[in-house]
Length: 312
Image (cartoon, rainbow, N blue to C red):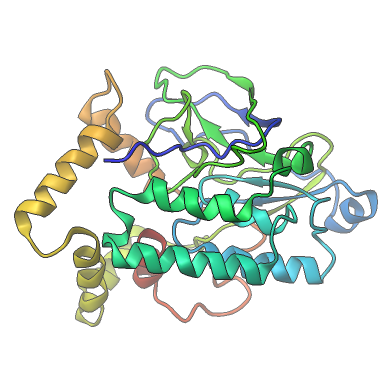
C-alpha cells in the first residue's frame, strides 16, 4: 500500500488540536458562535469550516460558489478551515483556483480513480497530482493567517497538543490530507477523527459550518436502504469497482489495509474497530449551517449518497 501524506500542510499554518478519549476519537473542541452572522460579516470576523467529504468534493464547490455570490466568503480573505478532503475544496475559497478550474481537476481525479479500482493503493499519488495543479508557488504566503487545517495525533492515550505548526517550502506546496483516514504522516493524520467540523480560530465570531452528511441520518436508515433490492446494483458496483471480482484478491486487499492503514503500533483490534465505528457513526449536530437536504431534497437516497462519499 502507498504511503499517503495525510496532512495538507502549508507554511506557516496552525491547526488547533483538542484532547481526545480512546473510545471517543471524535471528541474535540466545539466552536460556539458569539455574534450573529450579520454582525460577523460587518466586522469581518466570519469564518467557514468544511468537514470531511470523501469523494464528494463537488458538493462543497457548489456551496462555496453560492457563499461567494452572496458575499459571505471573499476568496483569499475569509478565514477557512478544513478537515480531511474538505481542505482540498477550500482551495477555491483561498483563491487558488476558480470553481470551474476545480471541477476540471476534480473530474480528472475521479476519472483516474474509476479506471484504477477507485484509487485503491494509489490514492496518495492521485491526490498529490491534483493538489500540485491547484496550489500556486506562493500558496503558503497567501493563506497565512486565513487557512486552518484540522490534524489528529495517533496517540490513543489522549493528550493536549495545542498549536501544531509545520514549515514547508512553497515549492512543496500541498500534500493529500484525507481519504485514507489512518495513514500517518509527520506524526499526525486525518483531522476528521478529532475535529470533524473544524472552524478557524483567532477572532472568528461566527463560523459557517458545512457538512457533506445530512444531520438526521441513522444506521437504521442505511440498513433499510441496504435491504432494498433496488440498491443492490450500487452496492455491487462500489465493491467490484474497488476490490475487483476475485474473492482471494478482496481478502488480500482487506488484510493489507488493516495491517498498513488501520492498526497503529501497540493498538488492539478492539481499539481500531471502536475508532472506526465512532468515525463512521458520527453525525453532524443541529448547529450545522449547510448540509444535504437542509434547504432542498437530496435526489439520492442515503445509501447511494454515502457510497458516493466512499468511492469515485
